[in-house]
Length: 125
Image (cartoon, rainbow, N blue to C red; front, side, top):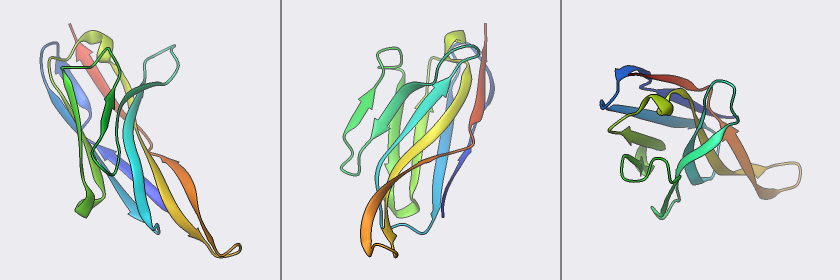
């Protein structure tokens, strides 16, 4: 069982900053890519930012230059620093991780995609 627990959401005024954190726990061999997605009311879930185990990052165009994703492999934690927040950044932010687990029945390693429960970010104008 692998779990992701997010923290750091809240209410902030436009132009402000927030930092989200997501910690992975449970039984896994290694964490590959970690990242953040968000879902605004009435919209589909969309990619915000991802970071690989080698610290390669990818951002959506809407957050480039304002958000920074980072990770602490020793703590199995990924962060999202959000600056210059806009009302359109409002939504539920979900942590995502692609982990490698050992599957005893097949005696092999396989990938598992895991999602957090989400944390609400509200940016007021």
